[in-house]
Image 1 (cartoon, rainbow, N blue to C red):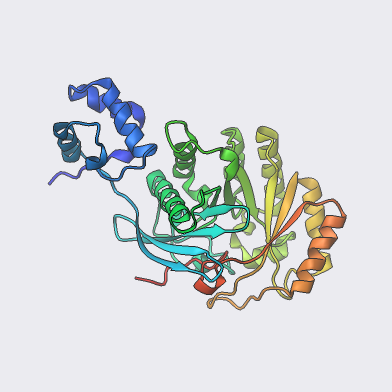
Image 2 (cartoon, rainbow, N blue to C red; image 1 turned 180 degrees about the vertical axis):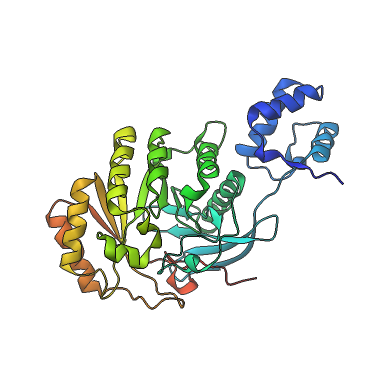
Length: 346
């Protein structure tokens, strides 16, 4: 049997051509596009303003491959972690993070990851494949529904900080952002979207060339190469000097400040000397800093720094003019916190 094409991999032009070639009216293509990307339909039978014969014709030519929630856990702090099942049986995880002033969806961009960061559970998995733009989009829609159904609140922010390295799935990540922000899609402001990278200099420059409107975050975690090499092997081929140049290029092209994510590990990068190195790096790149509490994982023996050390670290930077946010852990009790995502169900 001939394999049907996934309709959500088509551009609007290709969809339109299919309708014209099949003797259908032009406006029908626009109706189907709206069902797919504005109304998030995952079944042709939902497309109620299309005739039954047309829906049958679409079914025989195309498939829709929706992401489904296979499991959900709710943390004591209201964080919801979901295992999302893809059409081929692979699983990824996504998280709804509720705080007092926002509802954030944390989505994955790859099944597993190839970067092997030493402190991150996903880094101990193999990278199986990239997600499609539709699979990223679906996670956003499913988490948005969770926010509305469970907390009666709208989603306010999206972060590409789940499983995988977004810039190693560049085209699909940018296409998913386009579907989420476009007027023909979910019509979100790109200012409410943050893409986080472990630091791939040439792809950061490409983001600048593409003049993206969303926010960029860099997982930094150490502001000297020797320490960063120890925990993030990607740094050996993308040194801090290379990253500094790429981030400044990105800033010149987009006008968007970079967010440095900095996990403070006990006895590793938690001293005032480390804070001083971070300050120097911040002076060279227009930026702000998110200090993140570490969430221990069984594969690694790093520990979170003492709360007092974290506060001293933050105060040192703030007194010297750096904008600092301390991000307290959410969802730690269900392994949904930063760096803890790894599929435990099978």
